[in-house]
Amino acid sequence: MMKKIWKVVLLVSAILCVTGVICVAVSYFLGGSLDNLYLNKTALPILEMLSPENILNEIAAFFGA
Amino acid sequence: MNRQQFLAEFNQYLTFFSPEERAKIISAYNEKFDSVGPEGEAALIAELGTPMTSAIDFKRRMEAGIKITIDTEREANVDASLSEYSVETETEESLNASDDSSEATSENTSEQPAEEFFDKAPEAPVNVAPKEESSCQHESVKPSQKINVFAFIGATLLSLVITAVFLAVAAVGVIMLVAMSYLLLTGLKNLLYITDALLLFGGGLVCAGLGLLIIWFAVSSAIGLISKLYRSVLRAGSDKECDA
Image (cartoon, rainbow over all chains, first blue to last red):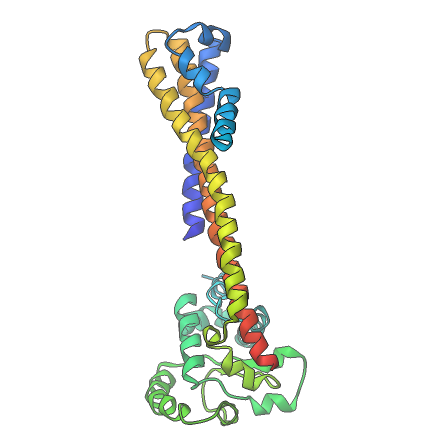
């Protein structure tokens, strides 16, 4: 039973990761880049919120409180 | 299903036996397969049924005490642990006959002490017979009655620690799934800038894949570790009783 679930999870994860990598590759192929993404005003707040520094600060604040 | 597949699957269903007992049972089945040869393999497998039903039937018979007897003939030729267990296949007639006799025998076994029980003559088709540990063998069938309370409390505390650790790991996976939802939503808002949208979708999908993997790793590892812990506690409890 666990093996079956594990196989399904592995398959779904592999599909998601491969699709994601393909999306990023196509974006770079079309001339996109991370620097350009940071210039996007709509995406900037989310990118800052999800940045590792911000997450670490939030964790530290959570445990420090 | 061939012999290897049958034995591999059958072995998986023998979780209620100790590893040593399991090895002996499997080797006894191997002997049986050897005796019929490659041409009789299919017939033997058909006769035994599916590995699961075969294992359940084996356990049921062991608990009922019908088929578990000392194989005295084999004991005379003591030769390694392989000879401790012998397996005979059952025809439909013998099954029916044994089922009839099982009710009567199970009634009798409740009145008999364990030692007498194992001294019975081997009439049954399946014989599983430990020579020296016969008294303990019967007791190990119900290990739940001999749980060491302190070990059980320790296992519970340890399982709480394991749960906490793997909850923290799972939290990382959940954060990645939340990040995925944010990235996908932002990507949808930026569909006009296709390159940015694709980057956001790509990042979101990778986050989702990794998050799923991390969550499943945490859940399955926690379940596996905790179940192993409790199993070892139960086994240790029954072993102690046997030693005493």
